[in-house]
Amino acid sequence: MACFALEQAFRKFAIHGDTRATGKEMHGKNWSKLCKDCHVIDGKNVTITDVDIVFSKIK
Picture 1 (cartoon, rainbow, N blue to C red):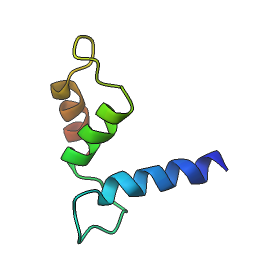
Picture 2 (cartoon, one colour; picture 1 turned 135 degrees about the vertical axis):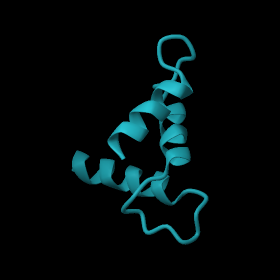
Picture 3 (cartoon, rainbow, N blue to C red; picture 1 turned 120 degrees about the vertical axis):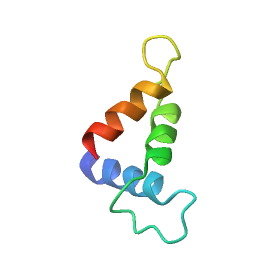
């Protein structure tokens, strides 16, 4: 059940703001939004730059 909820959350963030998105891939801006909304970014230990670097290394 939790896996399904996680997948649904990913898909919602992946399509946010992009009418052509399928929900299978996530763009950098949506990754940043996900990290902000989940309070991963705190401005001191983890910054927007940090999550952008992580995204670019994974993508």
